[in-house]
Image (tube, rainbow, N blue to C red; front, side, top):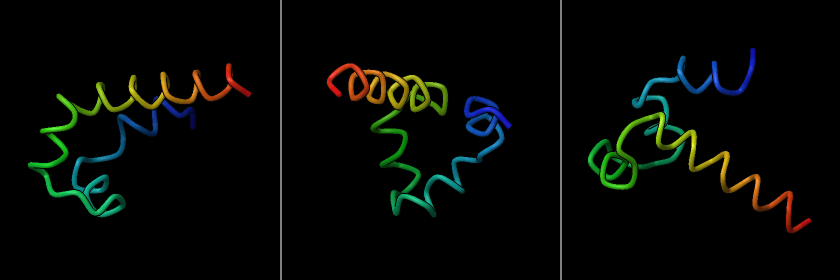
Length: 51
């Protein structure tokens, strides 16, 4: 399964459990799961460029 598809299939509840964030904290940091996905892609893109 591709990374993007796994993000869509993952619930916010799953993300809360894995990260230790509350739902309120998650939505304060990210508008939605799509925003989290794009932030993660941008972070890793910068990491790879710096590498």
